[in-house]
Amino acid sequence: MTALASRSHGFRYGRGVKLAAALVAICAARVAHADVRPPLYDPTGMDGQGYLGFEASLLPYGTFHIQAGTLGINSDADLGAALGLSYSERLTDNISLGFAPRVLLHVDSDDLNYDNTELDLRVRLRAGGTVYKRLRLFAEVSPGYGIVFPPAAAKSKDPNGFIVGFGGGASWGIARRTAVTLVVAYQQGFEQVANSVATLTDSDSYLEITVGIVRAIR
Image 1 (cartoon, helix red, strand yellow):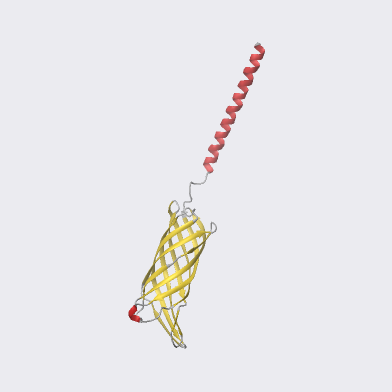
Image 2 (image 1 turned 90 degrees about the horizontal axis):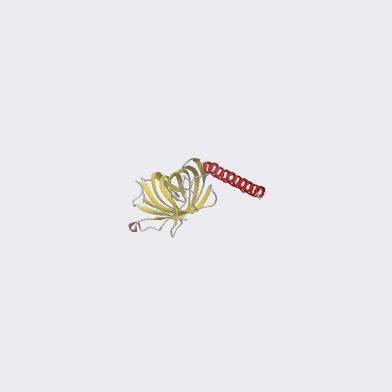
């Protein structure tokens, strides 16, 4: 009986030692894993899937081109501005595709008699990546369709046609799934207007500096 009790006690003691050693090993593994665990969210703010944004642009330089047959006129644009919205979907970690409509204000020059407004309906493709902590750099191309609206007093049809923009910029994460953006781009327009005699080229092009904010909504 004494020998049997001794063996039973030793067996229980051995099991206890093994269990304690296993628990220590598990805790050590968890502590080691915690040291390399990724952050709770992407500090660039770009870890969502669909992003809604608001943008404001300054157009410090631009030109107008009017072409009727062999007669062409070029003029410098006055300082303009633009306000827009955007929605983009992340296709991969480095590429997004979206829709970015905007309204251009004060589309005018010293040679024009009227202050026009322009609506740009653009698709935007961006490609880029993280370069340092919260900072991402990217390039973009924005093809679309532009419609110029002269004031009623001009008694003119609305020039419209293909537009395309190219640019590059940066985004900086300011909060979870939120970032601010800065973009420098150039947009070329190919608008035309038709009258009873012929189709006239009435296009504009702009250098633009845009600041914005984007927020993941899903």
